[in-house]
Length: 233
Image 1: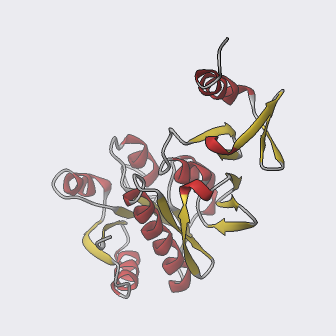
Image 2: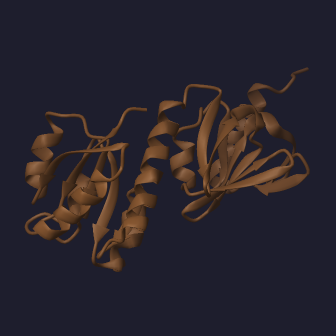
């Protein structure tokens, strides 16, 4: 894809300068604007496309988290803060990553690569394949080869025939980029390729030789799809 259009929102001039200089070293990022408060950033969002926000949390008047909650159309967000206590709340708002100040460049790079991968995944969601960064490699995966995807917190384990891949993505983020007609959530920790189900027994589905749990919240939509395809007498 083209460069990520990014803005920095932080009330500290030194923090903005560090993030700006870090971003300037990455060929896939363009810093389109820097803002000391959320009000000015919001005005900019109304006039220009933004892919990514580097956002501080504790700022005067409106905090970064409160502003993020109020946004209707949310770009990708990486929180940059001196306070670790907001991490859980941040991830519940589907942020891409959470950086603690003072931010080290290698950690910044990892977060920005994750944002780039997420954007590429979103761009290719209507194709038959996706690209996923796994450790130091970018893997092209055919959707038809994915058996199921398992959540491991901020990572997912992608189960393929004869192998597994560990990717730095949340289950929610990868679910939003896969076709809902082919991939369905059966549990808070499992997203399955519907075509790979070989049997269903009680509150479990069998995929290849692995039984996976089906939780109460996800059983009804799964059964509805199965019944639509079930042969009738």
